[in-house]
Image (cartoon, rainbow over all chains, first blue to last red; front, top):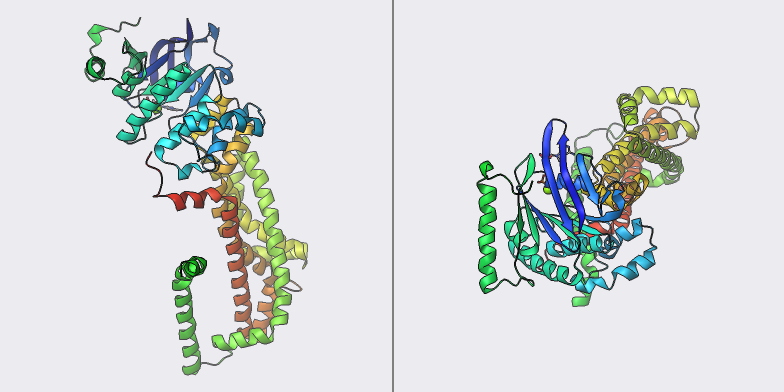
Length: 255
Length: 271
Ligand SMILES: Nc1ncnc2c1ncn2[C@@H]1O[C@H](COP(=O)(O)OP(=O)(O)O)[C@@H](O)[C@H]1O
Ligand SMILES: [Mg+2]
């Protein structure tokens, strides 16, 4: 049963075609990635979903047209978008505050999660006092506590150094196994997509269309040793090949 | 030893920071003093700093008496222009077309030469407080307005998009994101404007007033007392410095995250 469904979504900015034809679906409790080169139009897709921009085509959530944009998604923007003037605790409760929950109740709801997010002891710190990885975890905490139907994560680890990024991916995979969020992740990192996702949509360069939909049959937890590691590498190589040698005659097995 | 060094560190660091300024100002005063004493120039043309200081002390009651109206005009005028700039900046932020309609007018207002405007304003509104407040407001309003409007614009687009996705309306986004984003711009504007404000008040008094540093300077000049003119200049400089310092202090209090960020830079946890 798919929760989010997009059918032939298109978007142009003025004369610039950004999204040519996007059809995809995300099921309940599924972790889906959209993988594509920079500038393809990935963030634009989230702008349509969050209602910041309007496009053509159908966007359905639980079978109903997506018009009340405030309700379904908890959105994590490409940069962490932490407010430098708010302490981490107050950044984490931002979404709840906007929903009208009293500050005290919001804090009570968020506080127990700080340990799980590796932020215990940093509640009273300002974002500038945290490392990149901690900032991303704080941003993710702010996103998940909104308890919306679905997470939209736009390149959450794109700005991190390689070591921290790998650590964060492992952490997120483990978190996802506990919480089973329905999630749509944007990334341009093939390894990240394979490591985290149940399914991957590969986008072409702008104007973006979906060139391939790929199931990731790897077992979880994705510690990736032995056989699974080889399988993952093979999958990564295949995807890289699709992205780097686009072959239109193959068509896309999506339509 | 450790405890005493901790206690004296803020003072020591202040001295280190202020040291170059103290030395350069000191050298300048010394050169001036030597020139005034040994070149044979008359004190009615160029008085030595020691004489200026001496006369300032002798006339301190008159100086304080005249400084108070200047301070009042500066603060009241600045308060008026701040309130107006804040109200208008919000209007402009919510109704963008207003910006194109109003900004040209304000820009023109900035090109008016104070020398020409100050006597006219005094002519229209008399020798009282009103024309001073108006002139101070005139010179400080636009810089504050621009600082605020540009500050709102500096809000990260992603933050706005995220708040909208959370369900926030325009007013909510303004209060939660645009207003705090403007704070650094606001304080930069404040530091510049506060120096304009003092100059504006003195100019207004120069053009006509019963009391004030401006009219004091004019009278001293007409009485061939450059030492008293310079004493009044010293008072106005001190006043500007104090106000400037207050804005810096205010910024520290209003934006504690700035210092927190700088202090911990370099000793953050690894990830
Ligand atoms: N609001 C906008 N107005 C005009 N062009 C835009 C806007 N948002 C994005 N674009 C353009 O759309 C293209 C895709 O941008 P984006 O979706 O951010 O790419 P990605 O996230 O895949 O790197 C870029 O060429 C960008 O300049
Ligand atoms: Mg992007």
